[in-house]
Length: 406
Image (cartoon, rainbow, N blue to C red; front, side):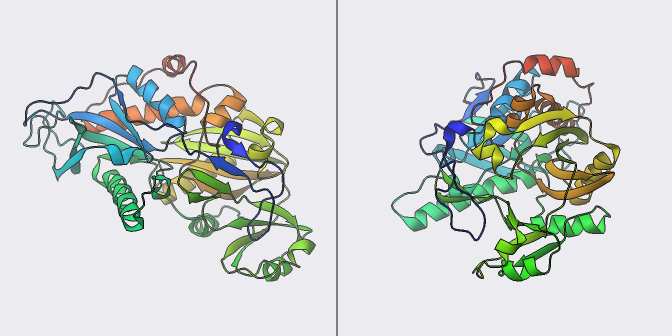
């Protein structure tokens, strides 16, 4: 879900199980990647017993603006960080020591709490990255897919390299004192969990026969969507969108069976659609106006995004579900129908800069920076008042928007 600069094939109708021409593609091939250190003067260590710098680790992919903005804000808040992307991570020189932390000046050389308390209370990795020694306090990985890593002529080597780096980042999230986004429930787990929690969800059938599922639905329209992500990466950096589709029930009744499962749902008539960002308990909501699910990619200028206060019922549902699934961060998509909230899905990697750019402001970026700083300080055993919101907002003036995913 990139900005229009990276999108091609904007006509046609995309949908799972349909033939469409042309497909919508996002081409990230050739997007420059990098390893970014803030502050930039974090120098290589020269002594074998050099103290490791407590540091936030951000892992995403080239072309995403969210972590570039977050890293700038963290720097101004005094939080060291390193940002790596899937496209260039294989160029890193890395060594990791995994051991229990015991506080400042411990046997691992971690510059931690001055109180002598454990830094994070558990296991952590001391990483040597390109000659710099760090101790991750917070690891946030998003859009960090092994499919994004460049291929070589050797298919086995390509797969081994991609899976190894992906496994390392995933496990660093478990070893660090804190990680985001938290758990990543799949769509079916989300729908079942929300229903059990008393939040309305659309009637849903998972099937290889959309026609049979549509026959069991009421109403003139149904929604067809994929079980997994809305983009398929056919080669590193080349993504093809397969978006949710609102279709006439009669048309879906004529579709042939598929050789893969899809989700078929009732279409819920509604008064408003909300995107609600949950960031460590803070909520920021936007009312979204669009003609179809793929409008943000195909007709970006026609989409409206307006910051709103989350209605109490929506706020309660989001906080309840985030707690149920153990999510520190999540982008929730909801429908409002009179006084009722309908849960559609939550994206653990949901982008926020595009929404901020459309609506104006930096509410989610501010919340992300404050939450990350709080987790970083907690890992060090420090408790200090958070920076004022207006200060963080000031630091984010002029934040980058290009390349943000939706």
